[in-house]
Amino acid sequence: MKTILLSIGLLTMATACSKWQSNQQQITKISTDGTWSISSYIDDGDDETSDFSTFRLNFLEDGVLHGTDLLSSNSNPYAGSWSLTDSNSNDDSIDDLDFNMNFNVGNKLDDLSDDWDIISYTDTEIKLIDVSGGGGGTDYLTLTKQ
Image (cartoon, rainbow, N blue to C red; front, side, top):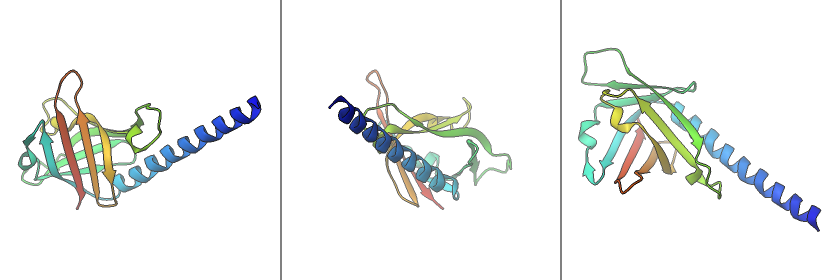
């Protein structure tokens, strides 16, 4: 009986891990395929989308993140990094993936630096949420493929 229960437990863990890896691979493929705009950014209830509407983001497979401002004469992109990580919750659902973005402090895109939870994703849209700990607010970010 113990062997059967152990086998079922290992099979369940393998299936959950496989699902997590599948979501991670799919989101990585979607993210790195094209250029993204910030179609919505709600910072603790304040709509700040217009502050970011001229920016374009490129997520590279090696974890490099480039942000460019279409209105800027500066041809150098804002450098950052991005990754997908496991937030270590127990259900191994899409909620377990964190969409991490980091830009240098003082960079115009620094407000986007966070470990975002993924609400949903399609080939052309990624919806993210961040709930700050310690009584902080809730931020929402929607990325749309150009």
